[in-house]
Image (cartoon, rainbow, N blue to C red; front, side, top):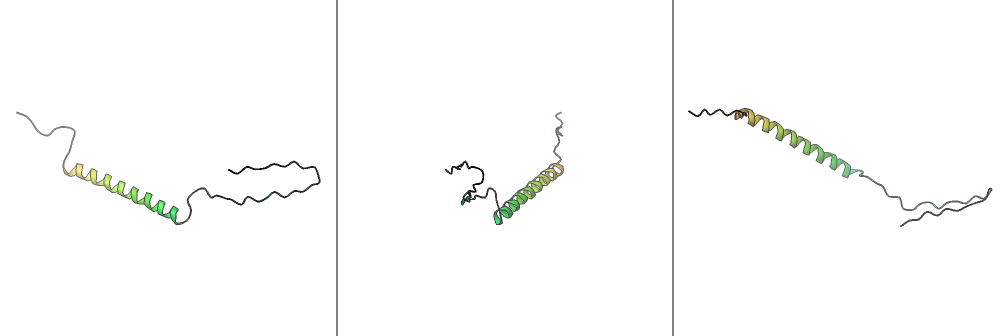
Length: 72
C-alpha cells in the first residue's frame, strides 16, 4: 500500500516532492477497446436479426391470441 507523506515547511524552504513512480491506467485502451466495441456491435446485430426473424415467423405462421379452431 502506498502512503503519501506530508511534510511541513517554513516559508522560504523549497522541498521537491518525489514523483509518483507507479501510475496505473484505469480503463480499456487500444485494441481491447476496439474488440469490445466490435463484440457489442455483433451482439446488437444478432439481437436485431433474432427479433426480426421472430416477427417474421409470427406473421407467416398466422399466430394470434384468438384460437382459429371452432369446436362444433
